[in-house]
Image (tube, rainbow, N blue to C red):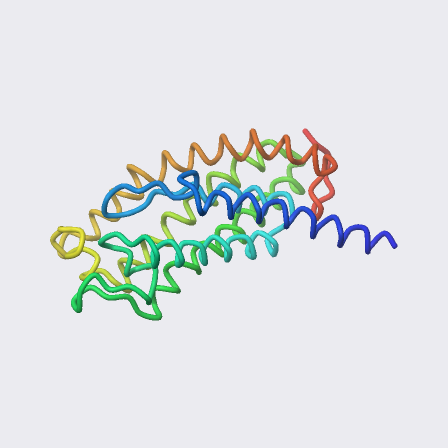
Length: 217
């Protein structure tokens, strides 16, 4: 009976987080257009969900993030959307492929898995839930940035550089610059938001995450 209650509770929590992500995905809250690409805040609920429900459910939420990015890149494309969807081509030179799905989905799944594992390790090992939320937020966000930009470089390097108006020979430096200039500040913001929102939701969901039993510090 207790197991059944836990399953219902988990489904309710997943439904709530899924609804939040869908609202974000189809409003400017989730994807912010920047001309040749979109900035995103969709990783925040993935990280928070991973902390609350564990790495497996975090991976599921990350997969949802990835699917929404494929859909968004297909119906509202910009000049580099082909790296996120096989269903869009800027022109015959710049076109998506099956690898686009890897770029769009794999790093997003890893956000939830990595953030969930980091949260559990710190919350269990050090019994410091607040620190666990902060580190999970930071690492989860960097997982997204490094994963996406790294796969773009490996799978679409020359196409991506040319489509965005950059010299392909300079692409590695540009990507490292994106990680440093954009990725690190985004990770710091994610850490703060994960702490603030995560603490509230941990109390709302019963003070302790469904998959981790630790003392709150």
